[in-house]
Length: 469
Image (cartoon, rainbow, N blue to C red; front, side, top):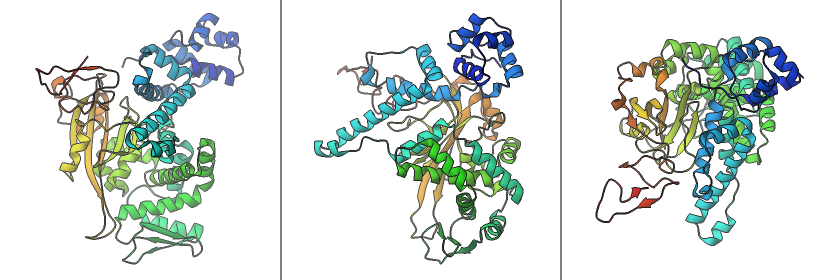
């Protein structure tokens, strides 16, 4: 497979400084000229294959870690932010965006954060009167902060993942029904008694620290009860590691810290029930059959999809996928992408995406071959899930789970077996969001793209009442 040019100047400079070497010493050790090293560190020239091998051999550089995933995510966020009419006088080139994302990722994130605050304020002012608009908060919501935290760590938390995997191995949690094992562990290790609650119990889980009793809803699905026991284990077993991660994240509010704790506890629970190496091997063996993986590990479809999106361990990565959970109103309540496809932060998702059709066909996996405006093609999967912990009168939540991969990885998924992935006409054109999609003549377009002007011909009516120019 051809490898694109790698501009890793910041990484090379960091590696040199870690070894307390001057540029002259470093260049001599690599067998290159001082001027070439200087150009590499300033991203004026890419690294050659020979230099990469020398860095790996002499300085332990993990070539597998030179993924452009982080750069792609930052470039996508920057492109969307700079597409705002606010920046109409500035049109950066692709090379400029790459240099910013690679050499100054902190600055790039700060710019994206500023634009997010600006957009939130603008939308608040557009929907509220002046008095409420002046009183509206300009800060990012706690959920936004935490979502960005997981996004920029690539949805993988090394300390918790390895810790959970080690505990799973110690307890013999390798799939199937984990409730008996976790029941015994919580009792023997923490003196916690696990009971099933009364029939009128509304909560999924309730823990009494004084009485050391964990009460589970008897009507919750078995996989939900097991997961909640794993969450309780996380709160007790991994509390110090969780607190350390939250402190280092430096959230702006205690609310965000609390939301992050929930996310980290859930992360540990998923890693405990689906240990990394075992889950990765099984996913490959079963060719990412979501239903079989759920049955094998005694988990829900959503838990499996979420776990697949976390397989980003250095040197042992899984297939890069995107994953999202969407409600009926089109709100994306969970999202992560290790692919070039990045979800829009503002506006609804593209209506041509098959995720929206999942609500119409519950109990089935819908497949779609799709192509985004940048020419990248994807295998997209979607299915509908419903959650509830009671009977007829209990409120139930309804979501679509969407996941997929770039088409070059489609053969690793059982869902692609009878699809003609080589036929260009089989791919449906989709976008990210109407705000930033440049496609012309889209019958499903809701609003014009931010950086395009419109013209109206009153004598002609096409798919939209205006033309893009």
